[in-house]
Image (cartoon, rainbow, N blue to C red; front, side, top):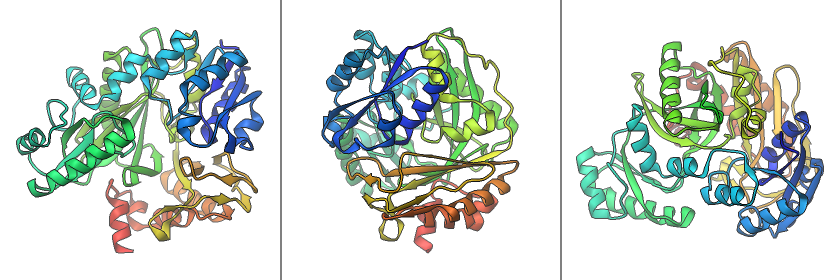
Length: 447
């Protein structure tokens, strides 16, 4: 087992990793930018080191400084969390060359799944259903239009090297295609340094359902059920739940087995997620694979009684998975992402100082957060402030518990998404479970 882990991240996920390390009796090193010097992940780590100024390009994305911090502190492994460098194959490769264990999959596995066109080819070969789409990537609008005609409109244009909703544009017809293609290509270049795109058939009113995977270095791969992440805005998830309200045991088995086949095809190890689009008639199609821990991992932890971060660390250290069969899902869990955004003004960012902070409590309530009264929310990073995760015996009990926990959540000094999340939880369509990825946009259009 590792002696000391450097956490190449910040915020709530850095704290989450610190807690897992403490339970495994592993010392931790926090890296931070100058504006994060008062962050809780810095306070609760065993050691900390400043790696640069606020812009992430000069701190949390600065590979040489992170590696220097690991060398100075004597860390023997690096946990990347999510975001930043978590799915950067070059970072994983440099860690390995520097004698550090990267707590995640191999650089080649990250590279193959990070290239969306290559990921599609890999899954097709493994017998995983994929959304009908282009046979390969393209950066030429004329070739893209020809592919769109072959697939049939409407289509979704996606960044081949992308994720997180960046570089994605829909095109309803040929007239809209050229403009959408240009916008998606520019976004892809800006966010990923790669303007290559690929096309997929646009599925009408799908759910976004993902399968949690764990793999070890001994060839064992297991799935831990699904999460429904359909409540999202501009491809950014807002509410997630497990199990999925529309997923039957038979569908769960089919989706899980397909995800395991896809992971086994590349010898995957670590925590990972296969994401599907689920149609109203129960057909599912591979979208992408995330080769890291997900923001929404706690809902799976609560319904499977599994610590996913500790499992990540154990398999990175060479241990075999203790879980060999998909666990039985118990109860229901819902996660609400609380962001520093103003829902009344198009969700614009709301940095500032937290004047008052009180987290809800009680049975079945968990809050993962790095904020406190007096904490300054910086403008440089993701707007996530906290995750409220509730669990109960049934979905309805979990929904009601989440709604009232949000009532108890006191967060003053910045605008937050709490009022909006309460409205969603009370909406009749959410209550009945009749939602899809377009729910929030339709809801906003009517409200």
